[in-house]
Image (cartoon, one colour):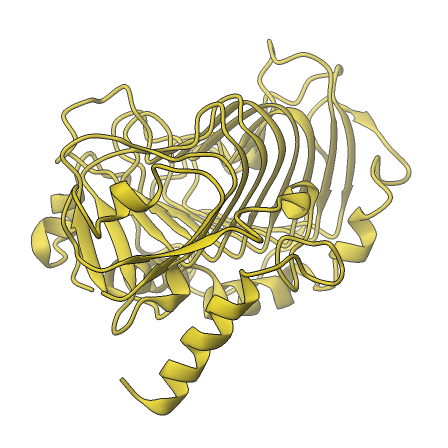
Amino acid sequence: MGLQSTFQRILALAAGLAPTVSGLAFDGAVGFGAIATGGAGGTTVHVTNLNDSGDGSFRDAVSHSNRIIVFDVGGYIQLSSAVSLSSSLTIQGQTAPGGGIGLMGGELSASGKSNIIIQHLRIRQGTLDSDTGKSAFNMGKGTNIILDHCSFTYGQWDSIDAVGTVNLTVSNSIIAFPIGQQFGAHVETGPSTFYNNLWVSAHNRQPLSKDNTQYINNVIYNYQAAYTAANTGGTFSHDIINNYFISGPSTTSTKNLYYQMNAGQSVYAAGNFLDSNNDGVLNGVANNAVGSSTVLSSPWHSTSLGLATRTAADAYTYVLANAGAQPRDEVDAFAVTTVQSLGTKGTLYKSQSSTGLSNGGYGSL
């Protein structure tokens, strides 16, 4: 490990020992989940092996509250069953050496838990998990959760399940190639913030927002239905600002960038672009007509415009360069290059193995 990498790990560890001066989950945290306290002030616990369970394992490390989880090893942890988190945890995937850390073959669950901070973690469920009713990450009925620079891939039920979740942020992350239902994220209760994320090749739910939502500077590629409220989803407010929607080979109707947005939804939409010609060039046009929803003249939340620091075009450049767990691995690189084809490549997968990537489609870390 180089000196720079070692120094970065020390800084990451130190950052979790106490709350930031600003009171945010970490420096640069944004949105409704930024108030999460994680394991600040608690015990630092080291993951020392890639075993599924036992001393030194990830499963053991997250089994108690008030912990900051750091990694002395890099690579994949293959799960034999879902891992349940405790409350008040900070998981610092950026401390892992080498190619980083990932979970494969099972669900990571924060169901009913509170104050969770996760950064730079790859969560890849896939068909190694025989339970098709589970998701890559489940935080149902959780509170104060922020997921930053994470990679959610091959989710079976949803990539991200956040039904009943209060105060959620998903930022700088990749949500790609869901299998099974081929759904991105399902959010109910909220409020939630989706910021600087890359969404790739899903049938629907990018996200399904049955809550008051900030959806800012996201890039959505090869969708069949992208931002969705659902006709039975109740009445909510949505700030949809400076996002880039890009159709692909699986897109059956480019008009479904906004899906099931009925008159019960109140929407502030500005600066959004749609590239619908699948010609290999980023050349979209403005598209801010969100179904039959009620048009808001200003954002429903006072912080939304302050978050929208990039145009849709600038968001495309930034998100493709920075989203996901770092360092970027084979699976995330494949997601990015798929998007960079700008309409000429991409499909909806039923299994990770269909991607043709190494390690049965999970890639290598």
